[in-house]
Length: 331
Ligand code: UDP
Ligand code: MN
Image 1 (cartoon, rainbow, N blue to C red):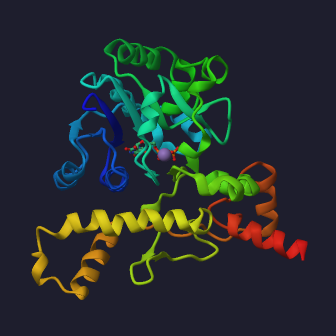
Image 2: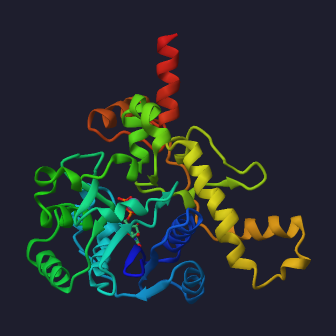
């Protein structure tokens, strides 16, 4: 299976941490395929070295940026222009078939069966299900397709300023042409789905194979308590918006498979005590940035935002808070 690979991308060290967790989760679930990470020059040498311990190939690529601030403003993600860098994955012609996975995804079981699918297979986007979500997709590397994509991006651009708008316009018949190219949602279960269709999540969530921490705050932004092995939750915090089990799983993979890599060359194993383990972990954790909770808004402002479709899903309008309200109402 050396001509098939899982591929991910990191243009900075934070997404690099995501890639390390994703790569470890694929390894832990015993994939028989190769693992490749594309990195841009901004990724530090140290991070590249760590990635090299988990991935079979660490490939340096230049950043492709849509620089489309107008469209990116619509999705409130000014930083996502660089996701055009994903297009480089089509240039990996040493492989005949690949599965691209965002660095903010986590594998919960072996998903090698996805290699039976054809280009371009992907799961529906929870926000607009006639579009596919580009967090997980099956494709065939090809220089021809790569060049066509680059040309398409300069001529037509992307309707959302990121890779997803571009790829959906390029593979424009995905919604209707071939149902076998629609991956089940459990291969790209986004945190959004947990609160946008809670009963379905309760019914099907246990079958999840890949979790996608889609959105502007990522697992590495959450605070984690290594003693209780739980993400610290409060109602104003992003972590309450995502199923806590999934966040804990991400952190569990980080602490058991990734953070030892950062320190084992500094401290020989035989001399490290529990306390040192803890210190190492908090050091690794402190290298992650933390996003402070959003400022408090008045209930009138909040209602206005709801009506404009701008619910604060990561904060006051989080899954946990909505559930609390529903419970109170039903009682
Ligand atoms: N990415 C990156 N650096 C960035 C932004 C994105 O390397 O600054 C890569 C990374 O692999 C990430 C993917 O592009 O998972 C898509 O971005 P993101 O996951 O943040 O988008 P979302 O899934 O939240 O829409
Ligand atoms: Mn993502």
